[in-house]
Length: 458
Image (tube, rainbow, N blue to C red; front, side, top):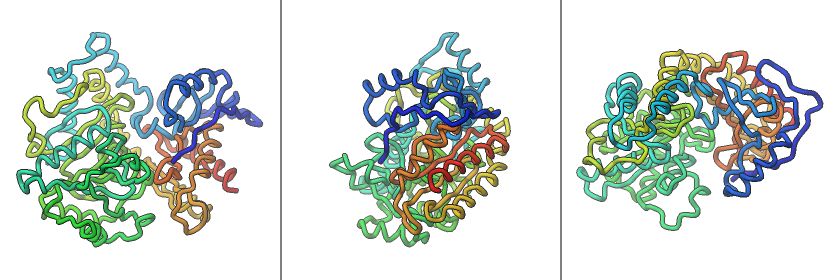
């Protein structure tokens, strides 16, 4: 699925020096070898998938090492720092709670938790959703949404109404239930006893899922012998993590009608798509359909471990006190930072900025498709997330991890921070700068990326 970056410092012919990028030493810096070697000695091999730049601090759209090098960040960590790195409002809110001090309350009430869930319900959630359950990771939130969907369905159809439908290629997390629900076989081939009531349907994205009709969904259920009445919930990523492709609007309307007809909950995994990333508060708003649950995380705090399930009291209140909790739920430190972060996104114009800059990112994606027709299978953008899916030859649907890896490496060495190739098979170059980026910074980063494409693809 992925390559490990090797510690092989590269010295450029000339230093890089712009307002947004400064590369004056070999990358990675030789003095950082010890840190990397400690991590590789003490951590599992799976942690070796990112460029070996040792981050020292980060502010706004920039990342710095301790040697004076500076990167323009197109990673947002991994679509986390939507409001920008080190957002001052969030840092101040965090410091106030830490210094009080109040670091943990479990499920005992705290003001920070109350302020955050009230803001999410009153200012962020659609007006038809009225409850928020806070957790720590996206995987945990996905598993919670599955639990709620099934618990809500059983009184309606008995234990047989237990099927959860997800989509081929969807990624929902790395815990057991989240990986069984996900649609990437290579990530779950270690699981021997799969849940027979977790079913994948074809993704109608128009690229790897060429059939965009709703008939493909119905046929997948029939092929697995699943009666629609047995479905407890349908869960999908608003856009797949390895792409930036929205699904057809007619398909999504049909899916919403199907869920209504069969009393199934429609769950949108917004872990990557939410909090302004797609030019709207929630990415699924592009589909103009109702969500029964929203699973979110990453951009909710721009850097601290927090996630949430947002839904309606009819199903969110199913479990009695003490039976749906989490050790760190509503952690006051995370909640304080998250509230300041979300206010910066909602009230600071960052959602509008993502919507406005979509035209710049989307235009360059179209340019990449046209310029490299034999190497780019599909390139697309929504708001401020873009994805270039690399293929080994024109017409192929196979992911080209080696080329994507080389492009990322070349760009990072020249001051554009990207994370390691992701997506189905790991052949995607993903672009996701903080939402506070301006047009000149976005254009500079895209120019560096194009230089990397030219160097690697010829």
